Length: 183
Image (cartoon, rainbow, N blue to C red):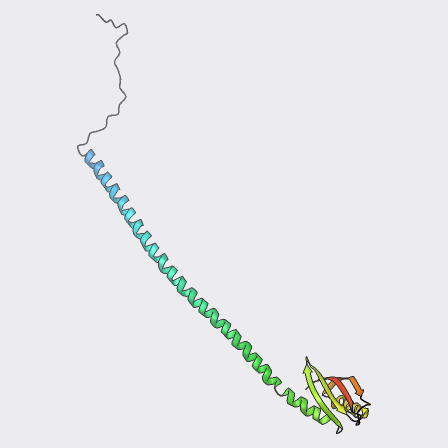
């Protein structure tokens, strides 16, 4: 078989870049590859070490938070106890200041009671003084009320009840008077 080429002969051109061939080029790239692996490995080790140190710092901080929470709880307990004690001290002060009030009340009441009146009860509720007793006459009850008003220590003097039992032999008048005592 015979082949005939009818195309004109042309020289073929190749587009290739000719790199200079250095004898240690492979060795150079190998060294760069090893250096890159060492750098990446070193960076990984440093990040791993930093991660472990941060984990220990987090654990230490959580332990401190737990300790501080206990201290805060103890401080709040002391604060509540302090408030309770301050409240108690304030109540004791109020009681101590008002301790003399019954003495002044009974002293002022003793000065205003006429001779022919017997007091059966003296009761103070919510700043209102309730006086109950017996007398031989309604005049004595009126004298008691006027003495209370004129003393200057009792105000808003009102007669609530005044009864005389006609069936009994000494005809006693039972009464009930309310007023306000101010020191």
